[in-house]
Image (cartoon, rainbow, N blue to C red; front, top):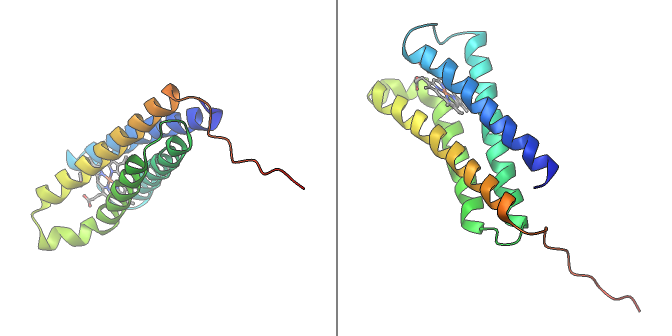
Length: 136
Ligand code: HEM
């Protein structure tokens, strides 16, 4: 496994766990979703999204990589960022619990796709070498 992918997979898991704990804290009223704690939660969420995108690209470069998986990581990551950034506005127009569950499901889906990428990277052979051109 690429050393970079190993560190990024640790970032993915750690970021997800911390964002989930903070998010459940909002949900169950342990702390109010305002100020620095929201920014920390968003930052952790964005780290998770960046990690999933990286892993989606990394797995595509290995033997047996999947373009569909790369596209999936980009779409789900983007949707998670959009729902996360706009959800306070969405609360007004959609039932709050529907927005909250969508947000959580997208996060779980994103991390699940990230884990699929990690498994592919682990199981794959060496990175596909760029085509060599003979000079002269
Ligand atoms: C690993 C990724 C993430 C997980 C596991 C996660 C989880 C949660 C959970 C369980 C909640 C409480 C329920 C809710 O209000 O929806 C929450 C709230 C929230 N999340 Fe996330 N989230 C993640 C990523 C993000 C991202 C990327 C953003 C924005 C960039 C974000 C922004 C927010 C905001 C603003 C709230 C508070 C909403 C409120 O109650 O006022 N989250 N998150």
